[in-house]
Image 1 (cartoon, helix red, strand yellow):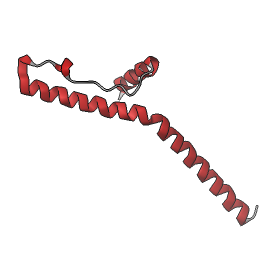
Image 2 (image 1 turned 45 degrees about the vertical axis):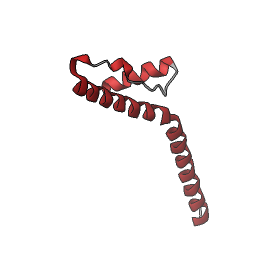
Image 3 (image 1 turned 90 degrees about the vertical axis):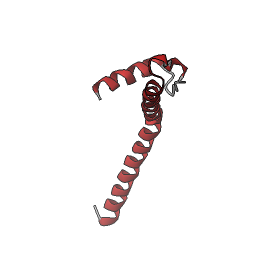
Image 4 (image 1 turned 90 degrees about the horizontal axis):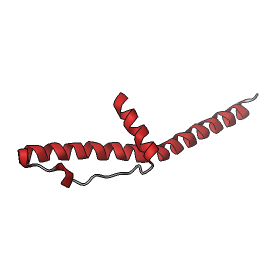
Length: 83
């Protein structure tokens, strides 16, 4: 194997790894967005409780659901337990 073939193989491998990483990034986007939304919701609820005390009603704070598949939502909650 000469240097040109080796360089071509390495370049092809790097492109393949980059493509797989890009695909995973796209498929993980809803999960990451949901984690961010859940964190923000938790923060909003805490601030609401601090401001309004016993008169607070956190059901008025809107929730965002980026993951609509119930099985995926369940799996996300299971993953959240172990994180």
